[in-house]
Image 1 (tube, rainbow, N blue to C red):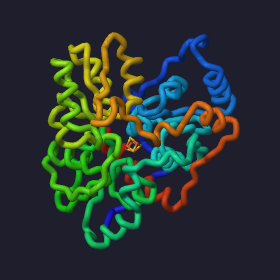
Image 2 (cartoon, helix red, strand yellow):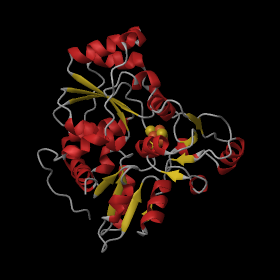
Image 3 (cartoon, helix red, strand yellow):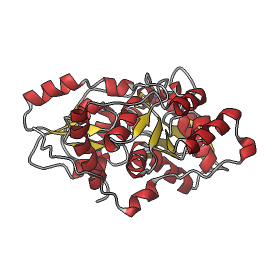
Length: 338
Ligand code: SF4
């Protein structure tokens, strides 16, 4: 069974962790829409911070204090001094912010913004798996519910899964959940043997090697950067496989001015904004030329404004689940500093 211990009263975060965050420069007032201006005013009045995932709509990213991947946003959630966190992402991300900040109000603009990947691992199924494998060490990708996190030994993100897997105990069987593609990639890169849960992100799963090959032929010489949630066939065609945060670094440093990007479409806004002068081409699926996560795109500016006006809808968690889920998150934050 997992070796859960009582959580520390607060997370210990080194100063260097802030460096992984993307602190947003303000955008000129003349470029703000009425809604964006209203959101920024409300944010100040309510002492709130807006955290937005890289897959959020461009207009939401533009009013956020921080835009990043799950790992960067977890660090920011842990460090914020604001009373209220408006989490522009999906449900499990807002839950994570609440687990880290039990005394703060955590708001999710649309409570229906779930995640199809998270849904592939119901807490009851994991409990049953653990009953059958009592010694198993559970590495849970952050894209899972609080009830699943509460049963994990350690959490990981696509940005630190290799580091987390390499530090896993040698004398225990490991299960990686819920994303099979990230799990397989982690296993390939680290050589650690793991049982892999059968779950996948519907957004990354539908990129195909055929559609990517066709695009590569149109843009010879353009490197491909892909998220590890993509299938192995797609990953094999990529010049670099990494988290969305690491994509920024790769694209900034690569000498090519045209780069093919295989991840959710929201990432294009951030790449184009932060690396002007380069062309980013979204990798196509077999059926369309873009790849949106419908859950991520449920949050809108209108909902963010409503959220700040009413301070609802709020994330609430069972205190015991919150307490248990805190432990593997804290382990991840500590382990990823090592
Ligand atoms: S992009 Fe995939 S993993 Fe991310 S929230 Fe959407 S369904 Fe979940």
